[in-house]
Image (tube, rainbow, N blue to C red; front, top):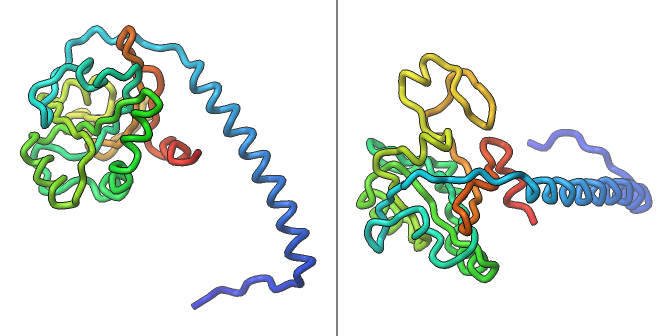
Length: 202
């Protein structure tokens, strides 16, 4: 059942639409400013030798770059004991197949990363018709170090770092997107929780 909604003339609609257009332009300008600010964040050097299991075999973090100068990682919530991937992550991942080639054309490699064994990830990919790169982080060190996976004890105690702040107890494996550069491996920018919403926009 529809709720009551204002009804007006074409002229009234156009006047209101022009006001909205100005607000939309202001939002676009602000978004451009935030994008510039994000690109200027300092990089953090990564020296730890992370290992992953991929369709091509065991891989280092550098291997995930596949010759590109940047790597976009999506931390997909799929733990070792999960029977299926996170529903929200799965809905987002439905669009990954189409973006991989476009990212590579801009010198950006892409990979989803989860703690579940590779065989389980591969079966889930096949079931949903996905083909994008998806790596298993195995022991979870990569997820833990980037604050997207926590032990049950940490969750019970609270005070874990999530979305760049100390937070009360939260779900086990929050989704997040870090972007790294390859020259000297490091973490450039990262988004979590609602901070990811703008990342799907131009």
